Structure formats: structure tokens, C-alpha cells
Length: 230
Image (cartoon, one colour):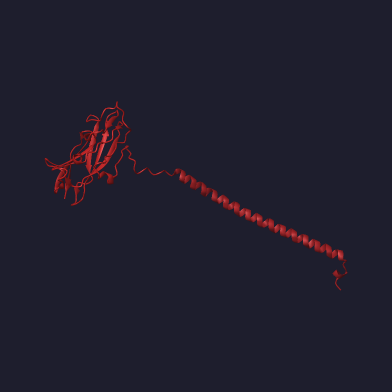
């Protein structure tokens, strides 16, 4: 017979208790170890994520918003080309409403230029012109008024012969406003290649050839610029 069979029951009981306690201790150690490992991994992931988030935030802080495409560096306001085709619509200057004390812009303080979008237009192609007017003085002046001559006029000639006048059939006064010193405004005016020299009810297609265009604002005229219709 083995020696263990001679041991009293109390010994077996103590051994079972010790074994149970040891098992509990081992289980607790396993739980503690697993918990520590999980926390370590989570802390490591958190630490790695922080620099990335910081870098992303810095990138957006350094990002510059794109300039508004409708804004002009010189403070000009460009008319919509689709609106420019309507002779009743003229661009407003980039300025505030004028007061009665502000003198009207004149040849002494207003520079007007006109530029065709092309030098030569294909058959059936409608020309368009950019009109720019600038206050060249050091004081504000007033643009526009109730009369057609206060608006933007476009005159097209072929040699000495009148071909087209924008205000002849659809006069469009420019809303009165104040043009600040050094500021300019621009707008596009389209021409449908129709001559109204014989009257508004007798328009006809302009012939092929070379033409000159002159723009005027507040009665101040630009230099003539040539272009060709094919």
C-alpha cells in the first residue's frame, strides 16, 4: 500500500484547499496579465494616433482658402457674359452709392478702354468686348445717371460709316454710383453682328471686313480698336 493511503482526511482536505487557492491565484495572474497587455496595446495605439491628428490639424490651419473667382484684384466687377448679350444690362462700377456733392467723372479723371475678345471672328461668331473704366484721380467721382449718355455706349464703324450703336435701340442708363480713386470696373458687351445704322426696325447682318469699336462711359470715349469679321 502507498504511503498516501495512510494519511488522515484532513491532509487531503488541506491539499485540495491549497490546490484551489493556487488555481485561483493563477487565474488572477492570468486576468491581470491579459488586462495589462490590452491596456499597453491601447495606449500605444493612442500615442501613435495623436501625432497624426495633430499633423492633420496643422495642415488645415496652414491651408489658404481659394480666392473668390468673382472677385477682381483691382476691385473690378465683371458682368456675366450671358447678361452682357442683353443691351439693357450694363455693369455697375465697384463703388458705393454716390452723394450729391461728388462730381461726375469726366475726361479729366476717367480712363475708358475697350478690348475685343478676338482680333478676328469667324463667320457667324458673335464678337464680345470688354469695357474698362478707371478713376485716375485722387478723389471720388460719380458714374452713371438717368440719361443714356451716362451709361456705357458701344459704337462700331466700318471706315467712316456707322454700323452699330448700343444705345440707339436699347438705351441703358448706368445706375449712379461713386467710383473711388484708383478703382476700376469692367463689363462685357456682346454684339450680334447686326447693323442698326438704318434704324432699329431695319437691322441687317454686318458684312465681312474690318471694323473699329469705341466705348464710352459718362460721355468719355476710349481709343478706337480694330477687329475683323470673316
